[in-house]
Image (cartoon, rainbow, N blue to C red; front, side, top):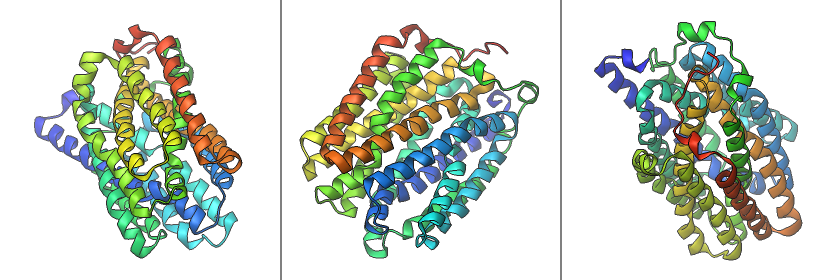
Length: 400
């Protein structure tokens, strides 16, 4: 598709891709670092309840994400994405309005997860479509998401000290609504070609590569620990006496570090390859959690956050590109949906449940220590069992 675009059209699409990443992750940065603190402080939820609700959300995302990927692959990706953004913006706007009823709040929260949970993977697929043979430059565009997340987390951490945490939902809805509009401006970038319209989308073909299954297994172990560690970071910082502005600073420092790493990602891929890059990133995740458990000190928490930023940028670039290399090209959106399902949904279910129970029964430090060990085990699994020869495999059309 991208080869058919004129240079001016391609340049416009590249700028819109960067803008869309800014909007998506500014929305995320305005709410994710502070949500669990809102649930504990404003609604009085326990860590176990947060874990169960987070796990239920992840179950719904897991069930619907492959479906979103299939619909996106078989139709106009940008219109599907715009629709998902628009509905999720309306649902997140309702959150503070129904907070007085647990049942209604839960219904709105779970419904929101169904629509927002697949948007990033759908947009990643659009970005890869546009980049085409230049897909190794993906990190140069994804870094704008890190910039947006960092600015939002840092700025809104201070804003919520004045306005209160309920304001996060209205701010998130504004960013997501804008992202819906930008999705429609992507022109024909996400339009289904004749190949997509005629080709049946078979999940079995996406999962036919054993190397992909081993990769997903290792990512599951790593992300069970890492996603839960980031989800409960605000609770961890609050437990050791951190303020909301410190929480915002912690997430912002992590995201700002991602920017130069995403920028350097093409050179790192060229020098190291996908698998070594992935192993290094996952080792950083596990090591940071272990250090958080051993040294619960304010300034050290902030000092360690860049480890998570470096790890995330390396992980995101290597995992997205490695999965794209291991699935048939015509099932690209489905492949990214499967990756997101395993790394955030399935891992989110286990991580939320385990961390929630560990925090209530053994304390936050024990949860982080055990999580770090699980993350390091996942790194070892990837190193031992994911074939190195798969790292440069072309995104072939096996079974096309």
